[in-house]
Each structure stands twice: as structure tokens, then as C-alpha cells.
Amino acid sequence: MTTLPPRAGRRCHNALNPVHSTVYFSPDLLTEMAAIGVTDRRAAYFASRAAALGRVGAGAVTATFYGFAPALVARHVPAVWDTAAPEAVLAARLRGVDVTLRRLLGEEAVASADMAEAAELALRAAEACSPAARPLYAAHADLPVPEAPHLAFWHAATLLREHRGDGHLTALLRAGLDPVESLLTHQASGHGMSTKWMLATRGWSEAELTAGQERLRGRGLLAADGELTEEGLGLRKELEDETDRLDAAPYEHLGAAGTARLTELAGGFAAAAFAAGAYPADLLGKG
Image 1 (cartoon, rainbow, N blue to C red):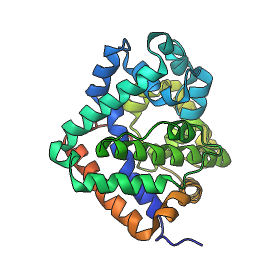
Image 2: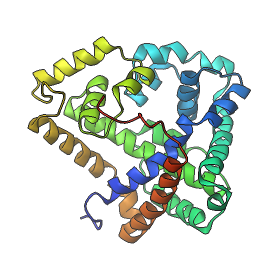
Image 3: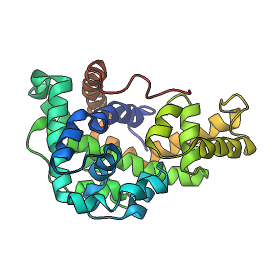
Image 4: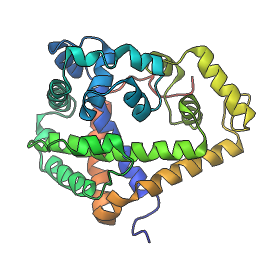
């Protein structure tokens, strides 16, 4: 029996995830990765997120990241490990996170009591995460917790983010949505990545996106105007509700008051990051 208000865990995730994901859009990460020889932006992303898994091949990255075209992943993995070992990548990523959070949030926020409290709450929530069938979470859970509060907070946000993400893939499979269809339905729901950024970052072609739209129309999930049908809206709701159920444990462990406080603190940091230009203005949208 849940002790939390409806969708409390989802709201907390929606506050934590933008803080975690700042690093993937950060020039500071690219600088640190270039210093160890990884100069391609896509290679830097795949390596920095997958390094916790070790020297894995393209298949493991494609499977755990889900939304990326296999050909794009194979262009960079496993070749990137010949340039920089996973251990070097993890160290470079943490340096990038340090510079990024200091730049976006400011030195006062990084050293604040609020940051220390957010780190403590997020780490406490992560105590209840399960590694079962969650490879990206489990790999990151094996990493040491950084000492600095802002890095400990980012680490814990990563654990919670990947825990939810791994469970979300289970829900996507249950819903029968392949990688392209999952991107398109998320976009049509009003929360997903714009077509411009799908093409730029996910490796799918316009023809593959169009074919995905046709498959969704054939299932009655997408209307001719690109909006979700009533059935499509229902499927996305079921999908998110299932993801919430699979991700309930850390927030139940933290409790209603702790989850609300973590959401408040993380939301403040996320708002500051957005205001500082952490993300491209055209990242999200239906166009």
C-alpha cells in the first residue's frame, strides 16, 4: 500500500532528471573528454553514459539506451574504448559534472546546506533501488559516492534516473513500442524531443521516423495530424503509470515528506540550470 500522494515519485524524477542530464549538453564534458582523446560529441555521450558498464560493445549500449539507432551506436562503440578506457571516461565525466554544476548553479549553491540536504535525501532514496533487471542503474550503483555534496547529489540523481529509466524500458516492451515508436509517442504527448533533435542525436533517418508514424497510425495510436488518438493517450498513461509502479520503492523508502522536500530542492536546482542556459531552447517540441 502506497504512502505517497499520486505521482509523487514521477514529480521527484522530473525535478532530478534535468540536473543529472545537464552534463550531456555541457561544453565542460566535451572539454574533459577531449583532454583524454575523445573529441566526437556522440562518442563522448555514449562513452560517458556507458562507461559504468565497462568495456561493452555496441549491442549492450543499444539495448540499455534503447532510443538510439544501432548504426549510430556502432559508429562509436566499442572503438571509443581504444581511445579512452572506461575508468578514464568516468573520471573525466565527474570532472565535467563538477565544472558544469559550478557554472550553472554558482559556487554559493554548490556549497549550500540545501545541496548537502538534497544529496543526503537522494542517497537515502537510492538505498531502496533494486538492481534486478536494471543494468544501467546496477552499473552506476557499483561506483563510489563522491565526497563533495554537489557531486554526491549528482551521483544519487544518476542512480535514481537510471533506475527509473531501466524500469521504463520494461514498460515500453510491455506496451509494444519499439525505439522509434517510443520517441514519437513521447513527442506527441507533448513531453518529448523535437524532430530536429531526434534527427541530430538519435541516429534515425526521416524515412525511419515516417515509417514509425505509419506503424503508430496503423495501430490507431497516432492521428493524421500527428497528435495522439484517445487510444494513444491511454497507452501513454498506462505506460507512465507502469513506470511509476516499477519505480516506487526509492520514494516509498524516503517517505512522503522526504520525497516532497527532495522534489523542492531538486526543482530549485533544475530551474537555476534552465535559467543559466543548460539546455537548447528548441530541444523539446512537436516540430
